[in-house]
Amino acid sequence: MASVSQFINQFPCKTPSKTLPKPQFTSRPTTFSLSVIKTTAIASNSFLKSGLETVPARPAFVVRAVDEDEWGPEKDGPPVAVAEVEEKTKELMEIDSLKKALVDSFYGTDRGLKASSETRAEIVELITQLEAKNPTPAPTEALTLLNGKWILAYTSFSGLFPLLSRGTLPLVKVDEISQIIDSENFTVQNSVQFAGPLATTSVRTNAKFEVRSPKRVQIKFEEGIIGTPQLTESIEIPENVEFFGQKIDLTPFKGLISSVQDTASSVVRTISSQPPLKFSLSNRNAESWLLTTYLDEDLRISRGDAGSVFVLIKEGSSLLKP
Image (cartoon, rainbow, N blue to C red):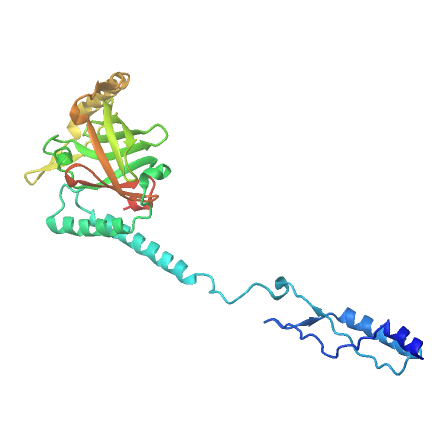
């Protein structure tokens, strides 16, 4: 017997621990694999049929980790920034409203020449509000927006007022003042178009510009060009005119009018064949600087020497429509 006890002691038997490890629960519900449960149940039935009915069959539960994608993304964070979109839309509407109000305030001012002090104060206030909402804080870094032809709508630059005044050039009016910017070649062309009773012409200046800051450019004028006058080939004369309360019949003058029209046509053909007159601009006064304080796809506000302001509208913009 002693030998049997010694033999048994060489193979000690450990009593199985009845303490089961505690399952680790997460904030997500546990998912059980149905296929694993079904397989375990079949294995348990086979084991009972093998004659070991005294061993009770226990269902096996398997804890399977669940990928986060099966539950969708976390929804604890805030929703899409709807408030930011609404705020941006509101700001764009305010800018559009200010732009329309500014253009409306130009009515009857003849580009600023005839603006009253009250109108100027209103225009300055609208310009200040737009500058505070400038969507392009660095205009010289958005040169594609600067490209193209810009029509002068208003200015406080007194140097242009003699040009705009009809007293300086009798019977001649300024049709358009414009600026063409080519950002690829860094050139600027300023143009003034004149219209008279018999002809139209233009005076242009060509310049180069250099970027000096995110808002400022330095402009150096190189040459001036006086365009070839384009005379009208026909002169419209009314049938009668009123003079000191009396109507004067102009029918007897039809022959003279026809003769004038023939002469004008001949002059048009002669003058139109001549090249424009060019002259150089090389003095110290041929340089200037320009600070763009507001810029978008159809409106530009710039400030120049002596605090002068220029408001220009892009050619083709709806803001130019009456």
